[in-house]
Amino acid sequence: MAAGPTTRRRQLGADLRRLRELKGLTLEDAGGRVGISKATLSRYETKEGSVKWPAVDALCREYGASDAERLALVDLAKGAKIRGWWRSLADPIPESMNLMLTLEDEVVREDHYACMYIPGLLQTRAYAEAVHRASEMRCAEREVQHMVDIRMKRQELLQREEPPHIWCVIDEAAIRRSVGGQTVMHEQLRHLLTTSELPHVTIQVLPFSTGAHAASVGSFAVLGGQTPELDVVYVDILGGGLFMEKPEELERYRLAFQYLRAQALDLEASAALIQRISEES
Image 1 (tube, rainbow, N blue to C red):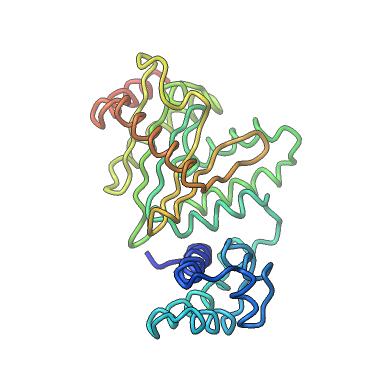
Image 2 (cartoon, rainbow, N blue to C red):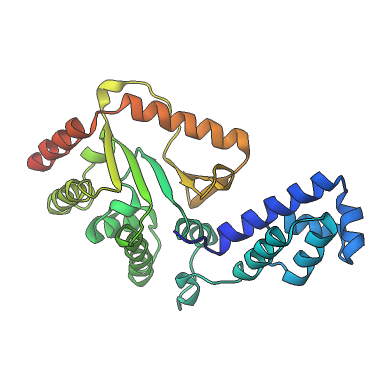
């Protein structure tokens, strides 16, 4: 999967900081040598906002980067300006969703733990509509349909020529919770079984019999970049989402997901449980 604008921007920031530190320069010293402020260089390195490729070229020359590395970083700076499909939408979307779409457009894998609802990438339209109507009590129907349209568009990444690997551990509570009524739930569970047959989708169920487990605090997703340092954790919160990328935060959620995978039913038993519950609905 080709690197998108956010991946490029984050990689550029990490590489610029690495080169500066290898050279033994402070932000102020490095910025002064190429005519940019300490604040601007700090913004470049912390992956915030746009960058100017001539400044990146000058920094690389000052840091003593090889020609190949310099050209690669300039290319990253130019590519960071590319805009995703959601930027052209007529209606605005929440900022947290904007970032989620940006990151998700560039992932190579997604590890999801879902305790309340089926993960958005695996939802049917009817199920997604029921979820949005319940969680956005004051939204007009037009707004609900707008958000559902975006969710359905997100799912197209599963059909890409080189799709990311989606691994979902779904709590039994989410499988059994009736969302939208009997017909909607039956369709949703059948859709889960069908989607689980895709080679790049893995679905496990965390049964009630597990008891206490590694993620009792709630749902989350680890969005995997092309290298581990580009990973981001997304945690559901009321009214939006929280993104985390500090190494200690990433490690905590990666470890939690490993434990959840180990505690969940295997693939065959998970499919059997989903099948059984779908027949009950």
